[in-house]
Amino acid sequence: MLSIPGQSGRTCDGWSRRELLRVGGAGILGLALGDVLRLQALGAAAAPDASKPKNGWGQAKQVIMIFLQGGPSHIDIWDPKPDAASNIRGEFKPIKTKVPGIWLSETMPLLAQQMDKATLIRSVSYTPAGLFNHTAAIYQMMTGYTPDRVSPSGQLEPPSPNDFPHAGSQIVRLKPSDVPMLPFVMLPRPLQESNVIGKGGTAGFLGPAYDPYYFYQDPAGDIKLDDLALRKDVNKDRLERRESLLKKVNDAMPEMEKAVEGYALDSYYKKAFNLILSGQARNAFDLSQEPEKVRDRYGRHTFGQGCLLARRLIEAGTKFVQMNWPSVANGDPLTTAWDTHAANFGPLRNIHCPKLDSGLSSLLDELDQRGLLKETLVIAIGEFGRSPRLGVSTSGNSNSPDGRDHWPYCYTALVAGAGVSRGALYGKSDATASSPAENPVHPTQILATVYHALGIDPHTIVYNHLNQPRELVQAEPVLGLFS
Image 1 (spheres, one colour):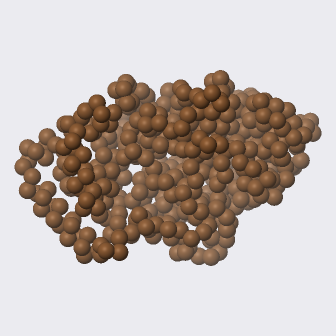
Image 2 (cartoon, rainbow, N blue to C red):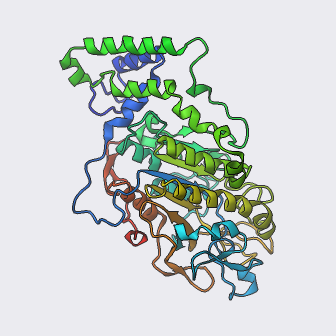
Image 3 (tube, rainbow, N blue to C red):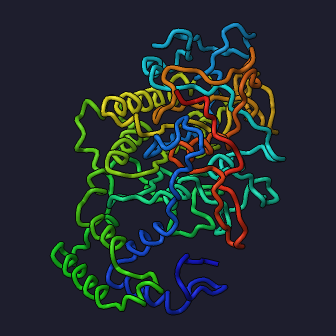
């Protein structure tokens, strides 16, 4: 059931006939986007509670989530253990970073020079709720809730309108954008494991008005943005005339009807027109406006150009950008996937880590140089890490002698910006990176921290498709991350 708060005409089957006619009529005039923007603004967050802890509260205006789907090996990237046995420490040597006492793997030399801008959480940990696959872990990471329906194969069922919403959808509902820009963008491919596509990546029971803008194109290639451009048969003057006509219709509506129906064609439609007319969104996606040396620095590959695009979207006013690792969760590790059961060290050394290194290090440095890091929360994380011991099976998968299996019991996240301590470590793993030795952090706590940084109480109540109250996330923010 779809319910539009503040409007009459709700039925058990969705919108009433009158509502459908109204929205459909606007759609005929090319204004469906306006309805989306109006719906998104119907749940603005309350003013911050003065009793809330001040650590990081409300310091973020926007979020960039770098989601490394597939599960990168924490011990081979973020948390090297040079004193562990050879079948644990692996082939890579540790290197010093710009921050004394913080070491990274030799696979990340560029990021090592940017570690003065970020905190590493080396104690992310959870125990799977009866499931040990990517989809369940991704769903938990994106929504803050464990899945309730699993297919006989052990994978989750496809996305459902009854799913819990992605955190980005919750955020743009509670903190609607005040600029004519796409509020939530997900790129360059959907969250996916095998044939389960998009699970955890939708607005779920909030309704499609809060879905992200799915930019499923390779930002390193030619980009097409037909849906953000004027149709060939509709020029700018014609669209502006439509706006003027709709304003007259709106002005002619009786005040009582405006109040009861909540259907005034005002600021929300203005945003829709501005989004198309201003070209702000189209310009943000136009990477050709960037100097060649900047594009080269990020890396001329999907991940690097995606990180550059994330920076441009944030500058243009997008509130939540999610950059998914360009491979599916269980793709081929010899090409682009972090799922390194069959081979770990060669792909990390030659393919994955150089791309991660160039893209993430450039993003942090540019955000800082442009003054955006003060108000942009950046998170780089996977759905889990990889098994510290080589060649063992921890999830029922087969692994090569140099492969690593799924490992949710201890892994690493990088966080930066919006008041997060710079050049710091939070938490600590044990001698083999197998479990937290200090300050364990559940993935749901990371989501709670995101809400907190944006000035949203993580325990804010939202009503699901059955009109049942649910918290945004049942976890507390990690206040120790903030300086």
